[in-house]
Length: 304
Image (tube, rainbow, N blue to C red):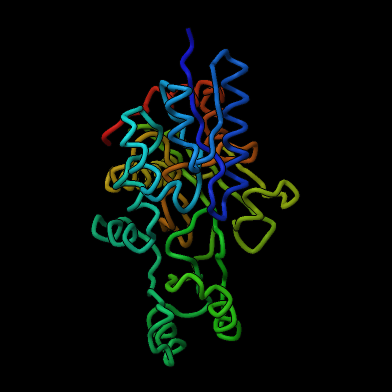
């Protein structure tokens, strides 16, 4: 008899719609292959749903805050039911862009330079600080968001206006802008699954480029790199996966500029939508969508 799978999807983050799409696609594929599946919101009914359904495994399809930052993982630990993807600590480390950057730097993984901007501090000399430490243009991004939500490329003229528009975050990261090619690498367990290059029609691979089919982002696989360079970026991705302490499948985002790779961030719960990259990389490697999902379920555990 096939296992009972509870899929957590939705939530209250800005990535709710992506989570629902991921949950729907995973549920559809599992049902098609004979699994007993239930989708649940991570709300006040979660305990009731778990106790009533009694799942063998919980598939965490949540994205963003509360879903991949260690919060829901802490709650799931209490149920003592295996759940997918990374655990409490790795999830919280990866979601915090400043902490994960510090870990990358400590472990000699190349990443763009940055400064942290706090809205409650005197920032009169911000332009001078940026020109001295980073140079314009720069990338402004929240410290604890995913899917490129509220990420902006800024110049001297518009940075104040953009910072003012996202001041609800209290703190943001200002990072040096790296041009060049967008390369994404998937890790599956402790194995290098593969890489894909993205050519967005927009300024960069932002939220719309990721999830809107009309954005017409070009996906290139196999990536046109020398074997040496391809191995280099895959090894960087695997190292990041290990030093953060990740489990399951992760996807790391890189820029390739002037023959150097820059790790932007690591994603502990990559999307499983029709436009998502990990299923596409897996398919290229001969792994069907159901086989990918089944591997993730088999890898699920507690006490990570």
